[in-house]
Picture 1 (cartoon, rainbow, N blue to C red):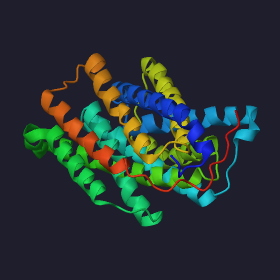
Picture 2 (picture 1 turned 30 degrees about the vertical axis):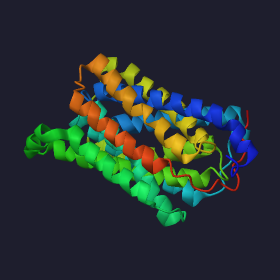
Picture 3 (picture 1 turned 90 degrees about the horizontal axis):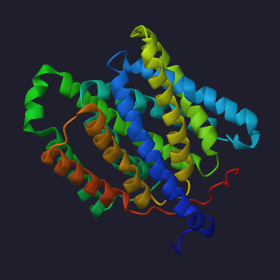
Picture 4 (picture 1 turned 90 degrees about the vertical axis):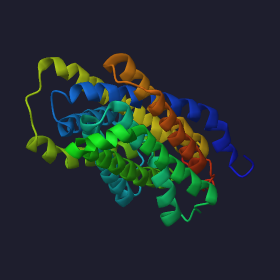
Amino acid sequence: MADSPRYLVDKRPRALAVLAASAMLFGAMAVVTRTVTAHISAAQVAAIRFAIGLVGMGALIALRPAWWRATRPVLLGARGLFGALSVLAYFFAIQHVNTGMATLMNYTFPLWAAVFSAQFLGERITARMTVGMVLSLTGLVIVVGPAGFAAASGGSLWLGLALGIGSSVSGGAATTIVRLLRRTDSAPSIFTAFCAMGLVVSTPLALATWRPIPVEVWPRLMLIGLLSLCAQLMFTWALGYVPAGQGGMTTQLTVVASYGLAWLFLDEPVTPVVFAGAAVVMTGIWLVSSHRPPAPAHVPDEPE
């Protein structure tokens, strides 16, 4: 830790705890989303999630104006766009494959974040990281399994896999941009931009695929919005203080939570093969994310 500023080191334990809590909330959100997409389209769920987040952030910033610090509008817009595409692809993937598999694919985003960081932040892709990427892709093949690939002839699984990987690529781009933004901009500002752009991107799709929303579904939609609001704020804040290796592995708790909760509440099976494949994926992600990039030049203090 000698190469990191003292104010970053001091906040790491709390940031890791916050990141772990956000990961568990994201896992719960995935399971609730699965139950809702049985009634309405994934685009509707995403649009309502973004709308709730935007209203919530507007209220928080109105109460605490000091939380608003946005200095790089182009990057904020890019973060919002890639984040919105990631969420939309992820929610659609949940409709085509089970909750755990969709979440596992989405949470391979550290692999793509490493690629984008090498391209745009000047970070090196080492032999260790290359091995990790190969391991993760191998693990995904194990999770899907021969039976899954055989069933893909109908198209639904292939579409779900493509959407899951698309959500991961977009998530990797968004995460790289967040790392840049956290040097200058506050977590609430970044999340507000994400919600605003997400609402712009998802609304046309939601209107095109609109289905009447049953009354009993609205409480779950509100819960999705609340879980997302809390989890995303916590995630964005923690990224400013957590090293890449620790952060990458901590976010994988979302995969564990989504598989566990889906097994508990949705009766989605977790076979030994799926368990082994997921372990291979997470090992690969650990190899990739344990590479430590240079510490940021500055991370602004957040208002308490």
